[in-house]
Image (cartoon, rainbow over all chains, first blue to last red; front, side, top):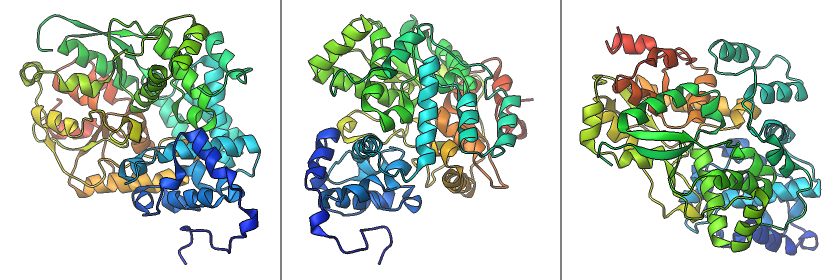
Amino acid sequence: MEKNALPSTLIDLKSCDRSFGLEVNERSGETVGLCWHCRTCAGGCPYVKAMDYHPHAVFRLVQLGLRKEALESSTIWICVSCNTCSIQCPAAIDIPAIMDALRHMAVEEGVKIAQPEIVKFHEEVLGSIERYGRTHKLEIMMRYKVRMRQWFQDMDLGLKMLRRRKLDLTPSKIDRPEEVSGLFTGTAENGKH
Amino acid sequence: MGSIEKIDLSYFPGCSLATTAKESNQSLMKVCEKLGLNLIELEDWNCCGSSSAHSMDQKLAFRLAARNLSLAPSDRALLVMCPTCLHRLKLAQKVISEKPEARAQEEARWGRPIDPGLKIVHFFEVLSGVEPSRLEAALVRPLRGLKCVPYYGCMLARPPSLRKERNYHGLIEKILISLGAESLSWSFSARCCGTFLSAARPDIAVPLVNEIIGGAVKAGAECIVTACAMCQLNLEIRCTLKDRIPTLHFSEILAFAFGAKGSTKWFRRHLVDPMPLLKAKSLIP
């Protein structure tokens, strides 16, 4: 059986969470049920090889109410939202919007994150935006490599980029950083936009 | 377009063009100067949120983009060069125009009005409106004999909600040909470059980038021309093939063909040096 097309074990119907699909629809503004598994998304996606489930198979998990399996899949983090799938999808499903919703739910529900390194990278980018209002690539990469304990990976590359002035030592900052950093604290107030 | 008077545009450079891709920014300025466009940088612009904000926190992504929209004067269009920034700003604007309560909330947050009708344009849209005669007049250094492949990456792919907006496929090819270069057809012009996985998971990005560059070489290209700073960087830093070809920013090649001064300074910032190629083609001394 194709490894990453569909769940390979028998599904225990009692463990299916029927509210899951509705929740994903509500958050993404999409309708997961529209997917009829033509697999076009998987055919076009440049990243399927690195995913545990093909994009449509994640939707199958959602349709079946397999919350844990969907939220713990690597696919939701490997997806970079390039939209290659969604322009090909015959049902015009905004696939990255659903991936976004699943990512948010995975973080909120504290499930086991399949790609912690990718989450750490996103956290470093957001930290940089919080501090400067903009991204400071050198600092993001240095902090990320330290967190990943990959001390020397890409060191040569970094030095080469510094020599060519592709990386700046100091960040490009906004004039009123408090306006942006304010978004990072107590954002719980307003509801969904 | 086409008249001699200058046209004012607000300009959102985005983090890449402000830092790692300064050469794209500088060459864009030169191109706009030649085309009679006056770029006014958006006052105190912030990061659009990039891939990380929408991946982790939808509200944050929306608010970061909304702040930028609140800073844009409504009497002139906002020019964006980075495809991701354009996307984030347009998606936020869609929410602002469809949900009055979201608009009111953001206007209150930033203490500034947000014009839901603000025209947000990519550089492509501006360029496609420039009359061919004007391009011809600006062309002082024809790129004779330069074999290029156009690389769009994911910039032509959009979510279904933006699907009906005009897209500019074919524009790079058209411009390259009008500049005297050869534009070759190949298989990877719309293949994603790996974006942030180039930083977070280089092991995934490397084979992807190699496939793209290998495809360009196989098609007989001597260089790749892209309109995205992230694509440009990824193709340069994640290629492990022995046979590498340079990746040029679209704005660089335009500015170069328009005879802008300082182009060798930008070329020196490349990790894959395009100067030997340009010398071999007798395009630079």
